[in-house]
Length: 410
Image (cartoon, rainbow, N blue to C red; front, side, top):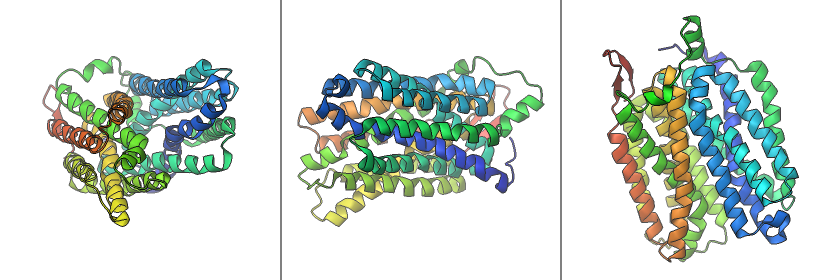
């Protein structure tokens, strides 16, 4: 177990990682901000079907990137992998500006997604090791506030830039290029990787197989299930919340306000959850967070005539839903040893991204079948309860085959 570096040395690398995570937040909303313009103008041949295909291609790229990066970051280190991934995302995001048609647009989004999807697992492995084992929960959740900050800033930027959709992608790509030299010149390698190199340990290989063998198999299944359900909730709510409220009979003219309150709740939840996880155990707090997410999602199925009560309920739902998913990542960082940590985080994020595709799709089917309210909230509540059950199966202690403890996480 590595000791954490002095606090003054931790600040700048964590800020850089926060900025990289904010790029993921940019990607969450940028396509949604430009799709109405692309469809209404028919630019590049866009229609609703083409927009759906492009959106799916981007998510598929992110999922593949997350799954593929784990062995690379464990083998070659966090620093080099992160710099490469940011470069990949930035270049292909800028290239979208020159896309001649929908097909090329979607292909470039997929390629940009490969780099972007690989960033989050690499960043989380890095900050968890850099902050030290006693601060893993807080460092992970605070870093992930960048995700929501990036989403909000991008939405505000769109108000000033759209309908100039090309400029949106140009700004996002250039932001990544600006970060690159900062990462290159100032980001140190993680302590765990440096310690392995100093000991002369061989670069780990074949770490994917380790996740599905004892003693990690049971933990991996539980983590993957929770991550799938967690991102199903995150993307399902972010995509369909205004429509669900509309079907319920609420005045949703201020749809942006609903989403803004939901994501403000997410930021508050991330700050609170990380602190509690470090004090009380990450597994324990993750179980509580998913359970409370299920409770408040179910409560949203009940019509609330008071607007203040409605917004309060949405805020609290955001507090638990979004940070519960991030706590899964924090749990992974504590549960697996450094030599397989990047791979474990990559698979948790990659399988979670499948849930990110499934969430909006399932909810869309419910909308089409006129079952969105209250059915959509019931589906979300059940997904949260499945996460509770799956995390409950994950052992709080994983021991190596020879019996030595790897980590105690809650």
